[in-house]
Image (cartoon, rainbow, N blue to C red; front, top):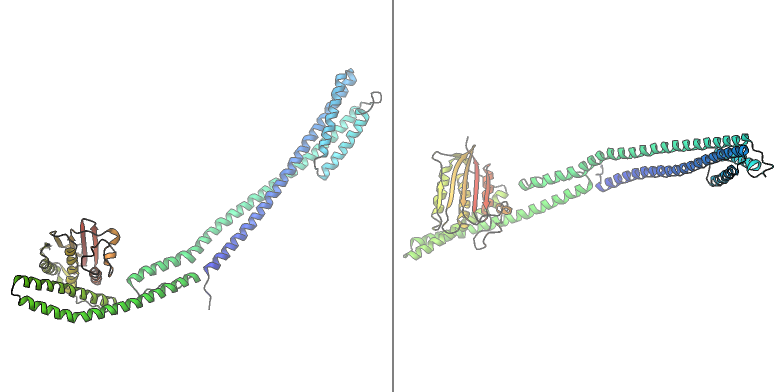
Length: 466
């Protein structure tokens, strides 16, 4: 069985490869720079030797001229000038001896030095009576100095050529380093996309899809690390599903056990209402009936949640005029609240949709009941029905406390209420969750438009019959 790749090992391999390449190129660049530095130093010494050679050549020329004029005129000033040139010539030779030279340049300098030593013995250091001033000696020494200067120039040219060659090598290596870096960048991006980005995208997509379809599981593919994450997420999904099933089973059993006592209580309250002898007794019985009806709706919501989540929920779809459902809901809840006016607006012509009228009535009942609960005393509740682009739109508007934007999705979750909801207002947060599930089961959607301190509009969209 083929072993799954490890993201850690892949990145270690990639990092090692890039690091090795970087070290190789860096080493080559360091060697080039060191060699260029050495060449620069050698070239500087060569230029210093060239400068001293030119000085030697100049002093030879000056000394020859001074001796020649002295021989013609006998003027001691020219002899002093010749002796000054000799001193400078000796100083230049001493400086030249301290400069490292190539073997060829050293041989040429040794020959020049020998010629100048002979010239000094015959001319510079000889007594006036023994001094023989020969122009040919100076010309020979000048020629040797020129030859030495040519050798120095050749050495300088070679070093310049070497520096240029190594500069090109350094430029080529830098170009290779840049090219390799740019060429490896798409490969690194592609690798990162395949090894990191795409598994994250698939995992995120699975998590989002699981919210609406619990059969969708996280992919266990890709590098070892992402496979481990997928397995852990799937284990979490399974544990949550098991916990959810136990919760739904518990809710269903509680709701089922409550129905019979609630039916008995309602029968007793109805009997008490009929037998009431005074108005206070009748009103008390009516209040008990309203509370029992509220309890019955809560039990119904519990059963509906458990059935919908368990996939055991069915709709009795029939062609229905939605105006009838809206009117009946308004009339029913107009009688339950004496301090709120439930205003109903429906079109003159029928709006037909293929729905389960009982369930749509349950949805509207939850919305109107919430609007009454959360509206201040004396404020109206508007229920409007209209058609728009093949959809039936039912709006329930209140003038209550409103819902903050961050709670718009929260209020549709089971057992969740708006953070701003008054704890004294009865409810456990099931009505809107059931309403959304019922509307979506009809291929519709329920929307919320609300502003804190202004009120809320719950908008139900249902497809009209063709």
